[in-house]
Length: 168
Image (spheres, rainbow, N blue to C red):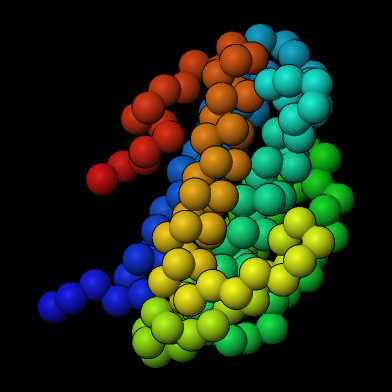
């Protein structure tokens, strides 16, 4: 049986978000064990001009829900980006996963050639569903999940590749 657009989108995004949740669990546990205010990690960034951990999680969430809604031609849920604690970030991830799990395969399957228009850099860019998923959504999503991992690792949280990849 060939892979479908659903198979290569929603389950992949859900797994990435679950792995991100695991990374945040380890980040909070590390802060508590080292007696560091958890907000230090939530606000940490790799470079002065990069977003902090909290924003990396929000963008990963937005990327996942935006992908599912655009591919399924449904309304994208809008959530304020107000999370400032590990529990709030975890709630955001949980809400995003619940939204993704509500999308049915038949809503996305067949979206390979659907035209999806994105406003990027001041202009509208059309993508086929396939190109949208593989050349925009997945690289963007994993960039922000990876950056969240790297922020935590850079700040002494004992995580590695296995934590990033998650359980098989």
